[in-house]
Length: 84
Image (cartoon, rainbow, N blue to C red; front, side, top):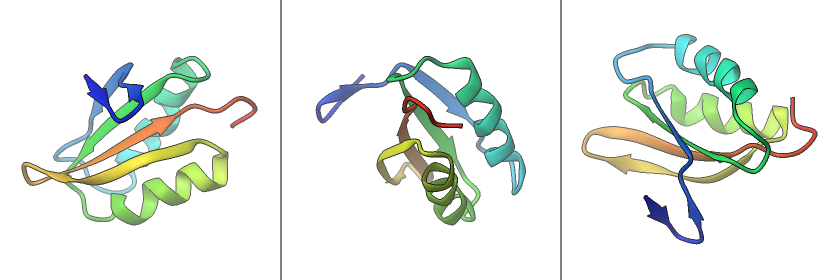
């Protein structure tokens, strides 16, 4: 899947889960992917609109894009070097 100038390397579907599960699962998933890879997160919990950008900012990952489609929220996150 091609979005803008990057490709999606991994997809994590946390639809149907509620805070704090999506962010906890995201934290674990970021440990499993390589620096520079892009993860797409699919979620239905509205609190992810606040929590995932804060997660990225706090831990040093790059939030490339976020939005809504098909009644789901999506986030494209690039794992950055030195990020927690």
